[in-house]
Image (cartoon, rainbow, N blue to C red; front, side, top):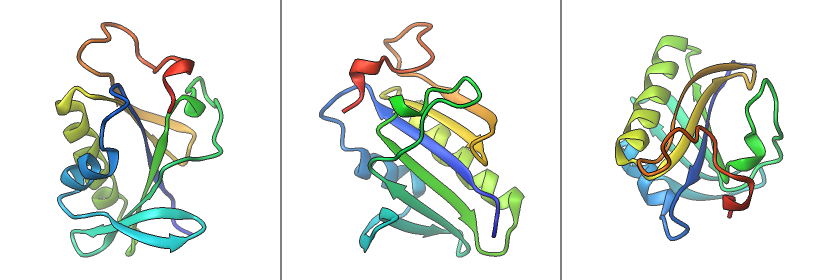
Length: 134
């Protein structure tokens, strides 16, 4: 089994179109799938698969309140190329960060924090408030 990077996403605006914004961030349209483990999927750079779940069961771990994030995107590389997998994940995170409309956190194997960003109008609030989850 390959190691995964996870991108947790929470919109600051309740009317945000998370699927469209993530599709733009991926550079590929996320396709709706009928699968119990994911809602949308895209493949980028020919080998890196991005699987979006619009809800998830994860709770706080390592000080990161995963339960406050609406969606999670799993990033996995078919060739287990960890450099390419991380590069794709960072590209998605940085695009969402540049929009200044999302809380976003990138982790490795749900254990190692890599980076995060917050919406533009939240000041120093690193994580979304509990009431802000949709």
